[in-house]
Length: 249
Image (cartoon, rainbow, N blue to C red; front, side, top):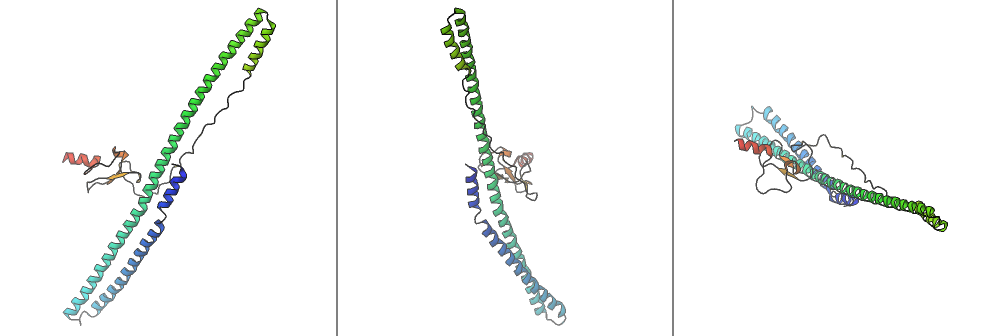
């Protein structure tokens, strides 16, 4: 696939990404505002409780404490919702980053394949040129020998004809040279130092990855190539480290 096609498909996939991010950020801002309002209510209730603690009845104190507790519970719910939105936003961006890494890997593979084909073509062309040059040298040698023999026979007409043939063979126009095709080298993409790393290779996420079914796994995610996988296995899968730990137990 051409570079333009990779770029076009990727741009199409991220067309709605800015709107989705903006929506999530607006929701998080709204949750922050609600939390701040509740914190103000909690402060007012707390001041009312502390300033009138001696004059309030037990039922009034209990009612104020319940209102404060409910407000705190609501703040916690808003915080949990905000965390979920943040995780959703991260996964949304990470999904597109993984696709970009996959497309870059495929594009690099295509370039290498084209480079190999170009190298094979150049080697075949150079071999053909060598064979042609050897054949021309043989023909020239034969012509020289014929001219020499004709001179010894003393036949000037035959000698002139042979010399003319030799001169034509000697100054035959060389075959046109084919230029080498060198595709552009793939640039190394800069890696965000804050992006988390995974797998045994301690690299960022790219391509197809698989998660370890051990909930206590310290790495969690692995690249297919690093653990010797080409397709997703059936059933539960454990990474090499967790597999060794399970065998020891």
